[in-house]
Image 1 (cartoon, rainbow, N blue to C red):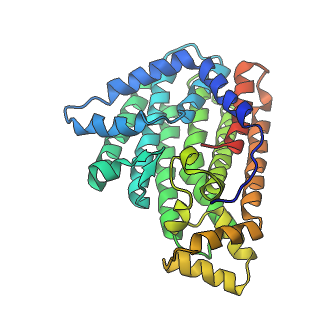
Image 2: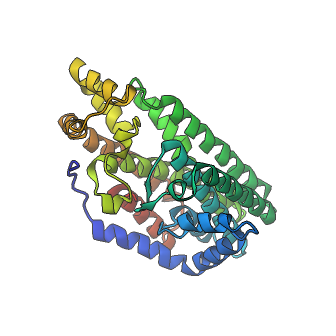
Image 3: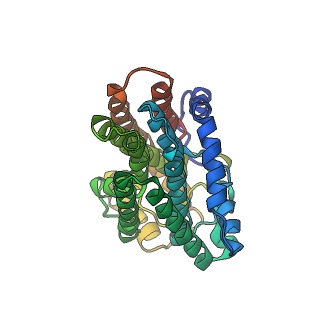
Length: 338
């Protein structure tokens, strides 16, 4: 059983996502049609494997950011549809690769593609989706959008490598960990929001503000994800509680508990995470140490801090339904996050 952390306003925050979905519904329908069309391939395994993940019930938060940002900036063209599809292809590719690296068995409550088709196929289909994504970027004719998204792709890969290098390393500092998630998770949130302004011709204060909004939202999102791995429920998480612990992942709750613990507690973390010597009773003991040192609560506090910075970034935009929905999305990501 995980640590119980009260997350307030669940119903209202779910409505925040529904509100944003409603505001971009027509555009999102076009994005989904576009994704289905561009997933097509003469190799049957490619659309079959890709659709397994793309159609598995994700909220499409990242492409919604692109659509909402374009609306917020008054865009009236059609290229935001291609860019939103690009973002979703990039996100799906990173998930396919991530599940192979992490040897994950569940994603969004379903068996991962690597379990059903194998690691090689998952990696190669992820590469196919990245290729499709870059083709879509070029089709918009926006070199600035291409620059932002291609840079994000490189930064995400750097983040994955940084996380791999830090894996099982209990000496990881909070600063080092935040650098990993800023690259691995927040970079795509930031790019998704920024390109909505860029395609609208507002590659100045508006683009910078939306990049800041997306980046800070992404960090908050990942921190809550880290907390939920030890405090959530399997059905809501779409993965097993304690997966990060079993995989030896060093996340912020672990960083905090390790540094606040005594010598005996640090030896426990080293045995379980660095040496991979885990026993049946270790996860419950780990949960007890996280509770003792308020590691989950303080991870959520950190997330709230980044959420506040995301809120501030929206300040330059006039009030309206899209701005309010983006503001409420911050609360959703903090209160539920997945």
